Amino acid sequence: MNDNKRAILLFTFLLSASAPYAHADSLDQARKLYLSLTGTTPSAVEQNLIAQKIVAGQSFEVAKDIVESKNGMDSRGNFYKVTVKNFATPWSNVDYTKMYPLTDLTATVIGWVRDEKQFNQILYSDSVYTANGISMAGNAVSTSLTTASPLLYTATTTTDCATIPKCTTCSTPSVIKGRILFIDPSTPNSTSKLCRFTSMAEADFRAGMASNNFYMPLSDTRISTGIIKSTNAMYEEMESQNLNLADPKVLVEKSQAVRLHQDPHAISGIMTTRAWGNANYTAGTNRRSFQSTMKHLFCKDMMDINDTNTPDFRVARDVDRNPGGTSTTFKALCVGCHAVMDPQRGAYAYYDFPSGAIEYNQGQVATKMNHNAIYPNGFITQDDSWMNLSNQGQNSTFGWGTQESGNGLTSLAQMYSETKEFHRCMAKTVFKTVCFKDATTTEEKNLVKVLSLSYEEDNFNMKNLFLRTSIACMGK
Ligand code: HEC
Image (tube, rainbow, N blue to C red):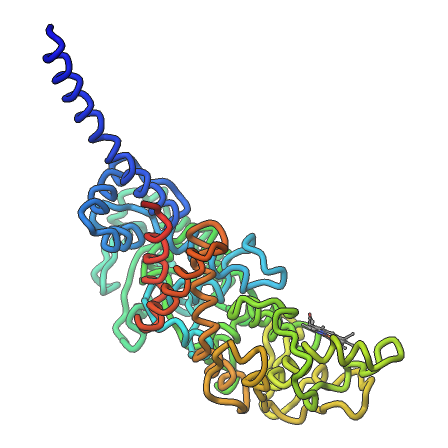
């Protein structure tokens, strides 16, 4: 072989070798994108498909496919149960940790992201996501078709119990099962009943009826209770049964009325879920709710918002004006937080969490709001009015919503929902969740700014914010 020929061969070899290298970048991007969105790695087939679409300029489309398990992607609901869950779980517990079971709060956030609801309204809307099912007691019409053979087994689902064959046709009489009649929970206003045989074991079925468990027709499983006001059991069991929260037939939106609150005045989105109440309205003075709001919704620690120039006329009686015998500390430190916080705290005046559930008494100020009158001339809470004294001074950078005062949590939360800092904080938190780091460099901070603005322009579509942020973090 002469030198010329060798050079050509080498060139051809280099060309063919360089093709996979160029492709390697998009494969790496594909892996990162999938990992960002689901917390898991793609199969080789998925990875190739994603890479191809990235190269074809369809990053957004393929990111959406990953999230929704469409067009060759199978992420098994991991976007919701891993990524979105991680995003919101710190909001759901007093320790602000990600290591916490599913709750009504996190399930509601997952539902809002999944259903692309206008996310800023999650603070005050009448909404809670629950398992889709029915109480077993009273709905399980029959454990018996004939007296001779108490229960019947078939996998059939039918709209009419009468058409189901009698037990004499049971093919496997040793596997004795029950049947259940229910109004389809997917169509709550319908009166037509669906009938289905459950594949639950007889003992399971009977136990479920005896203790009024919550039956989920779609998965043909039961969870211990449909009650969400005073226990988190439903959500923990949804998680331990690994139910697919991406499925709108599994996780559904309901009103908080009756389920969580008797009085509709009490209802204010995720801030009146049981999890938020458990974390923030237990004992204390309801100030923790303000602190948590700053942390989760505005990405601020209390010292960040400490502004000693704020007028102090709403600071409550329990805050000592002379800690350690001098007013210096109060003026230089205490007032900075309490003058900002205590006026907004008024919104929580009627909330408490005395024994496992939120208690709301319209017109009745909870004792803890006025306890410990260390400084008797301090502010006394007499109703649920709130004020925002932070429209001037250092905290005006929040870009607060227009309303400066009002009554009750719903109106305060509505004001929060218009606040620019809330949208910026959501963009920061999504960045942290899918890029696995805080935005610290100038470039990253600018990126978060742009993402936050696009989120606002996009009607607060949180799913799209996740998609765009993941694409921005998959590298070039
Ligand atoms: C960095 C912000 C900040 C500063 C500074 C601050 N506080 Fe507070 N304070 C809070 C928060 C937040 C809570 C609610 C904590 C909770 O309930 O978990 C609170 C709660 C309280 C309570 C209620 C305790 C209870 O549960 O009964 C009192 C009293 C109080 N602070 C007094 C003071 C005094 C006096 C000072 C100054 C020496 C001070 N605070 C400085 C943020 C602050």
